[in-house]
Length: 389
Ligand code: GDP
Ligand code: MN
Image (cartoon, rainbow, N blue to C red; front, side, top):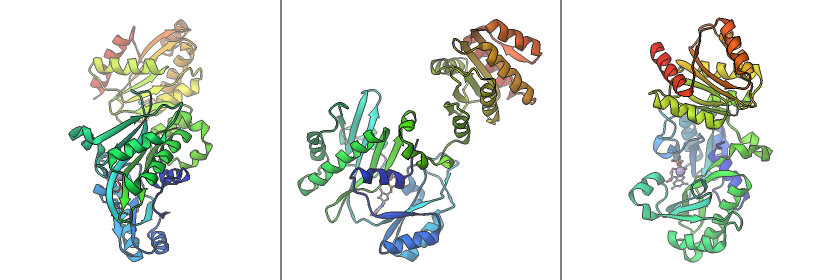
């Protein structure tokens, strides 16, 4: 789950990371009032779940409360397009109004769970503010990496090492060490997969603080954090993914292709996507209904897949272990009956109660395309999608 910058800053502040004073506003009038309370010289920042706002016109400096009001009225309600939003952009509902900082230096600091290292890694660079991917590609030596043993946690000597590498020396070191420790604590305490500060700034008056903040929370750990539930902003998420989650289909990810996949088990989902690609097609989603012995869930899943206008064929790939193929078959039949403008369905069914499942489909008289194995199913799904195109 992603959260907004202002929410990430609230969390980081709880863990002792200094952030600029500010407040959120949903109207230009509110932005003006927040700016007034901050003395007028502020930054007005669009709150969307994407970065690159600076270059996209979503971050405006204002020298007075009147200017802040004008800036907010230019930002709120518009659709911001940045290199991270995709071409459709994202509508701005809220702005963060913050005191303006006199910035002397912009750095980069993040801590994230590194799957390859199998542990948290803190990353810092003296070249902050800009695209960190670009820095990593052009001058990898400017990126400093620290692996953290989760058993012993983030140690002050590590922070000092990173401070030297980033030039945060002298009077800056103490506050920077505290900030780094706070950043790590926030990641660990909130089960975040990423906590990123870009830019981390040194101000003209010698303070170190987070001018921007981004946090991603591990969805699989959300049950441990009821306090984070209210931070979810469904308007920023893919609507079909939101609906799938509400219907208890937790493993649904929308992709860009035209073949919908209904699968049980994440491994089978990945094998199915690989097979579609091998057959020359592109999956429209990753949908794992797990061991849902529930006809309605199968219908819901197929309905969610069919609603995607890109979907031209559906591949049902079920290996019944705990899952019962006859229940899945009933779901396929029911969904086909409810959606007469049917998208062609290719079914490869195997495992528990497969004979009964096959019989139900045969006797339904519905045009379900049968496949013997996964390769065959993928080939037929790609053909069906092409024919429908
Ligand atoms: P992003 O582009 O979405 O990552 O948004 P950021 O929050 O990182 O803001 C973009 C840029 O705006 C920063 O890199 C800063 O250069 C600038 N900026 C933001 N707040 C301030 C501020 O208080 N003072 C100054 N001087 N610049 C700021
Ligand atoms: Mn930024």
